[in-house]
Image 1 (spheres, one colour):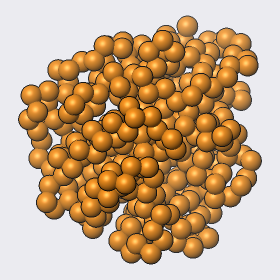
Image 2 (cartoon, rainbow, N blue to C red):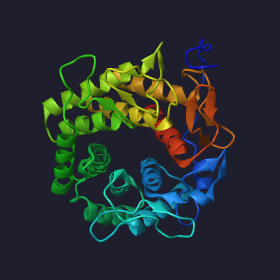
Image 3 (cartoon, rainbow, N blue to C red):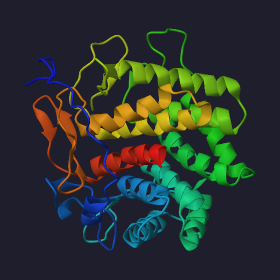
Image 4 (cartoon, one colour):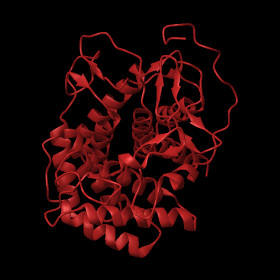
Length: 348
């Protein structure tokens, strides 16, 4: 079956499960979080990356009543990030299974995600010592600035978490301000409500940062711009009432849009942004967007197939024209957990 073929009947009545941490535990050792798996089996030869470990710290810190096992995961992820950070606040990204760094510290997307994880842990983790250590590490990196708007957006998500907990934190406010400026504003064309001519990956994070900046910094025009971007993004990624997210190849303005291969990270970023918009505005369109993201994992997608394995708790790595990619790597599993956390928060 291809994505252009007739879609199976939409799955009905599937209840969303609690966020499963079982596969995340399987992917984690005493050093960090392995990046890849073949089906549910860890691929140790590919090692670890700061990108995924940082996202692991985000989801473990978000748990309102974490088990001892989840807290141990948060501890390991925090320790990894502290080890990855240099004295100037930059981060290594890739660590081999031999515990040797394969790169030099930098300010790529992994820097932004590291600050996202550290800011979330500093603001939300129920373990005081984790909050304290995360706050120190966040402080070491908050003054740096990346060239990439997307890296700045990821870092700003951590700054916003900290700013909610500590409204007077000037360094976090400055990072959020600079990230919003780097992202820009959507143009006047209603058919392309985006600041740039190409959509790539985790796109909704950029809209979310504008929503957060507008709300936390008291800037109504920035808030409105973020909401316009997010509403358009939700609209163009909805087909026949279900979510159909942009593929890994992205989408350039004025070109045909492809529908494969869809990545779970797109769904998770959209769920994050919709949950933030719901909290800021109270508009019911945004909780409905979160529900659409949850439903994508449960099978309400272009192929009508579930995008996770209930037996392992792992998220599948992508939706191809022929069905799910059954590998269950860290990124896809974290996307599943993150999305289901928002659903659990709504019904708690």
